[in-house]
Length: 86
Image (cartoon, rainbow, N blue to C red; front, side, top):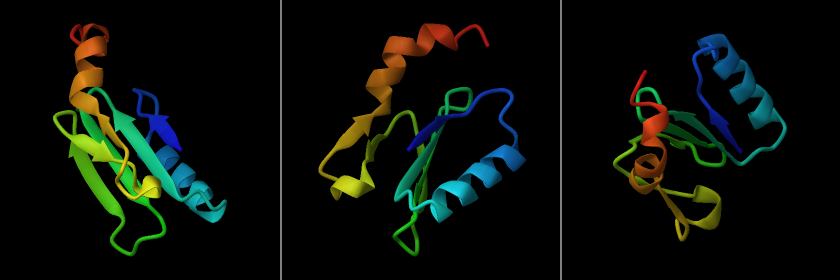
């Protein structure tokens, strides 16, 4: 599950969604913040399953054991024009 962090998503919204997804059995939840170029990853099945990555990182997909990664540097290069004016 991933969520794009926008201008209108408040901390309360983030906390509420995080709680609901965890209770619903979602195993991994990503919040993508393009304004601050960060990715928050919650792996609910791990005790220490919270990480913050930058858009410089390749982020491992935990539910695939890290065998699959998402290269945010490459993705951001393709969409940076959307955020350069903000």
